[in-house]
Length: 537
Image 1 (cartoon, rainbow, N blue to C red):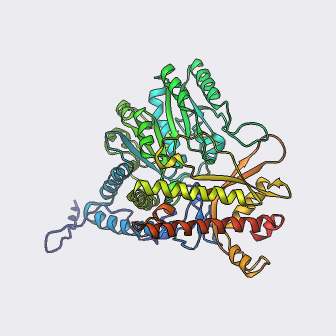
Image 2: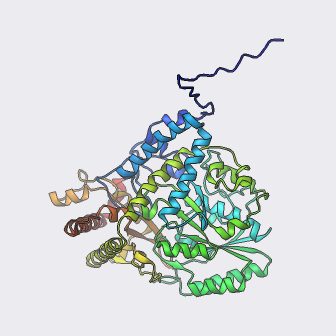
Image 3: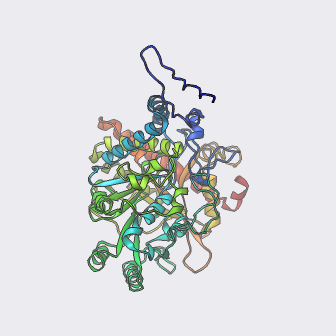
């Protein structure tokens, strides 16, 4: 019988033996710009003509772009881009020593600790489940809630009209796109194996001509919960903190009544993907047993998409380690997404490193760290003064009108101040249609200096690339739908304005106000020709 050849062992003079389990390492040598847009759904796809995704962002820094879009997506900063590059180098070195799977797992665990630290949390307060987006995290939450809620589940989504478009599908345990982050082709709005649920979606927007929060939202939520439980269903209640328009719902009294009446029938999940809440408020949600959806993009300005689910310790302790999780979730998560302490659950998933998701979170963590290194007093000052400047500029604009604010927590550290400023754009006495708002939003992202007639000052303004928050469609049931555009303050305007020298910090804030004024001036110039925006696409 022919004997098997002996295993080849290569060592250096010091006896070092390279790790053998480095399968997949070649992917890490792809250009960083390519890696940063991998491992997500089609929303990350770049337009070949312009190199940008549908949000107007590319995978490389764009320092000349006026970025007021932190409710949607922001271009990656130079700081974040550098961290992603260094993280890749460190992982390659670690993988050569330990093997790729072990090195990647160790890095993701370290990131859980780092994220908790930035958010003022400990491992005893929350576990972290990473994902490619907040939409994917909704599926993770639905799967984790199954054990507590029983065989029948109803998702009640407060403000589905002001959250991600995929929520209408994830709430029912259905595919929200044509392709998963794991690369599998699926059919949108078809069931994900093991995740079926009913859904109820009370809207945040009031009916009628006035754009304002629904004054009866608390009553609608209570009625939906009561109806679902009376039918024998457990409830996953997704609450809003905060919405695309900066609104919050339901109120504290409503949540307290739900906790009192149905303590074991309702699992609350907080949509905090905007990350416009203070660390104290975040901890309060977790102490109450609420799961919390967060992102490293949105307010913090990391590259889209980077999602995570914070699981409160009391829920983690109730997880049945032997329970089979929904089989269809395997298309939306890999083993490293789940905490190492959840060994039985992790074993149900493939070891499938998502390098794009990981690098986007590395980039986001650099922004989160930089923001929390700024003194809290200046964070509050900057957001307050810049917010008041935006309100004043909108009020003075002949073509813009603000959308009403909803009630917000008044004791939420710097987030007691508004950071999302939605507005309508008017022309000839009527607000622009939803379609015209979409065209305006896209035109704002372009350098139109060579295509629009005007004097030198106008052409200079219209040549600036401006990113705003995506239009939020508003359909009140009467007349044609309109949409609200959004000027959004994010962490980066704070970190880039901070200086320990008060005079310099003041100059930096004034610079940011000038940038906001340029964006509004460009809106004015484009609104005046909104009937010709189609040609600028």
